[in-house]
Amino acid sequence: MVNQTKKIALIGAGFVGASIAYSLVLDQTAETIVLIDLDRTKAKAEVDDIAHGLEGMGNAVIYEGDYSDCADSDLLIVTAGRGRKAGESRRDLADGNWQIIQQVLTSLSPYDNGCPILMITNPVDLLTAAVNRWRGQPFGSVFGSGCVLDSSRLVRCIARMVYRQDPQRQAACARTIQACVIGEHGDAQIPLWSGVRIEGQAPADYCAAHGIVWDAAARQRIAQETKKMGAAIIQAKGRTHFGIAACACRIARAVLHDEQITLSVSRPLAEQFSDAIPALSLPSVIGRKGIVSCPPVLWNHQEQQAFEESAAALREQLKALGSTAQRR
Ligand SMILES: NC(=O)c1ccc[n+]([C@@H]2O[C@H](COP(=O)([O-])OP(=O)(O)OC[C@H]3O[C@@H](n4cnc5c(N)ncnc54)[C@H](O)[C@@H]3O)[C@@H](O)[C@H]2O)c1
Image (cartoon, rainbow, N blue to C red):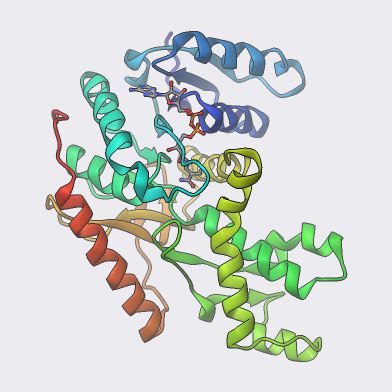
């Protein structure tokens, strides 16, 4: 099938891949969406299930395909690989999912046109770095959803505290609260407290005016709650997929429409290519080519130190991760 404009290839049609496809169709982000999965029967069934509602959702062409369908894509989104079970950490998935991602890269290689690759599979930072290592330059064409989801969860947690009595304002919190999480997606995530704004005000000012305590203990509670949100959902229903789907859709829109918006995505920590560069989330400007610029980070000493510790740990994990995937 040939369609040159605004096409997204989704590799992996499990819960996350199918939910992203559904969000993309609802959002009318892309004109063409192809689902690629080892299990072609399942991918075809997901396509049919989504397509049966197309009359109410827009005109996207959605179909099940193979790696040759990546050749004319504007964005690849990779979700192939298993999710964590209750009690597991994302890092427990590293070796198994890297095996899967290497199979994906080997199959993709003849059809890789250099368009941005958005990694979702966990552990997302490690695999973003590993795929970047496989593809090499240009900087910014391989990046991960990283802390976009964590940032969204942080906004939600702050809203629960400051809009405690008001479910409608909690629901609208994405428009009134700005907050950003950086670092590793998951347990080592770092909230950037200095950047938080509530209705345009520093949180200490907003909270003082509304009789809310905004001290170190409150921030610690919010940070812990944010960190545990994914695990709590997995404990209760076995997986997470809707939240990440909306985040992936937001990122995809930024790429396909060259929006140049700033999001906390996972990206290699050096612009010059070398094999052992870890990837972690930092605010990054997203456009048609992926990450198009890296604004300076407004962090304090403690935040920067925590970030550097994560980077050092990831560098070691990346070295330990072998590679059999052939580069182009
Ligand atoms: N980054 C995030 O914020 C975030 C959030 C939620 C989930 N995830 C991750 O997304 C990934 C997918 O989760 P899920 O719930 O969809 O899992 P799932 O088990 O439902 O789906 C995985 C899919 O990958 C496919 N697959 C396996 N090997 C393949 C290969 N070699 N080539 C092509 N397809 C292959 C499987 O057939 C399956 O359809 C997991 O690693 C999960 O941890 C990431």
